[in-house]
Image 1 (cartoon, rainbow, N blue to C red):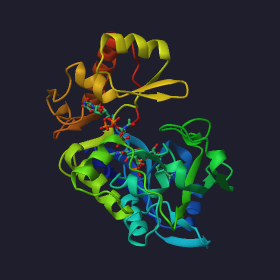
Image 2: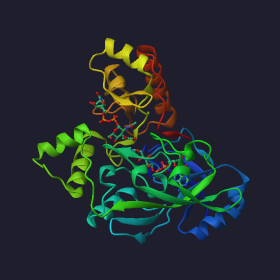
Image 3: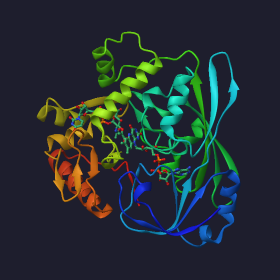
Image 4: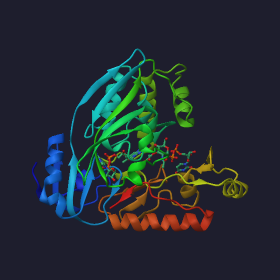
Length: 337
Ligand code: FAD
Ligand code: EPU
């Protein structure tokens, strides 16, 4: 395990924010994780565990140790007539994993195609897209407790998954390093094509009975059209979560805005934050190099040299405006560092 000083992070966060880490290391095995936990650099100050850097906004240089997860490997740990249990090391690229499963005919992750980042980060916010959430195909994960250094296996129930939420964003925040995740996949895939834009995309291509490869391709096409590629334009996907509001708030807004986009939930309605921000006039807005994407108002973008503070200032202005116009609070999805 090697520690580098004054490490440039611009290429390691998808926002492309130009910041330095005081110290930086890359871990490739569980053995190196254990070395890290005993290392003075880890124990003397702050540290940040980092995957693909696609859900992080750095607002300043990181005055501590950035730990980059780079453990690779996939293994079928159990198989039944119907299911495959695939254990995946934390540093595996998420979309490569989806591709790997689809190529073998193992269903479950195809709606989550093309989400950036790593397998090890996927349970943290229970990634979701096009009508599917990670929790539906999550079996368990292995983690190590940072302070007492004990390995722990988390079942699905212990992870407390919710919309863009889990135990690891709440009571377990910053307590564990996730080492691997085991997914449970279907040998006879169940096709989920109910999400509006996915159903429309399949229909547009005349696909009536799609297989998982068709779903993957359709999702990739929609995403390439709508979401900016971080390699070309810095971003971290949706900057805010879609807010869940009580029925009374929904009814009030619906009366005022009959075309409001909302989805019924157990405790009220989930509003499309992109619609709220778009309707408030922010889509395509740009101030210096910080902006709101021209095709998706929920995505903030860095046109080149925006700092984390520029992007955060823009996010705050949007939050205040949405609060003033609709009486709705937007919470950030992106982790602000
Ligand atoms: P990072 O950004 O590196 O880290 C995220 C958090 O997890 C940080 O708090 C970090 O400390 C922690 N962490 C990372 N790895 C570990 C580990 N091994 N152990 C402990 N803690 C860890 N998300 C969706 O849910 N749905 C989408 O459709 C979606 N689309 C996106 C599209 C684009 C273009 C972009 C840029 C992002 C999108 N995202 C989406 C957000 C993002 O890709 C996901 O949240 C992804 O899971 C983040 O993975 P990462 O490896 O980049 O995590
Ligand atoms: N909309 C607008 N204007 C916009 C953006 C959206 O009117 O600028 C409307 C759309 O027309 C649509 C609705 O809002 O009717 C929802 O839009 P979309 O299908 O693009 O989904 P989203 O709610 O904006 C969520 C996730 C995405 C995920 C997509 C697809 C959150 C915070 N975001 O976006 O996840 O890919 O659904 O399932 O839940 C991410 O988390 O980073 C992310 C990209």
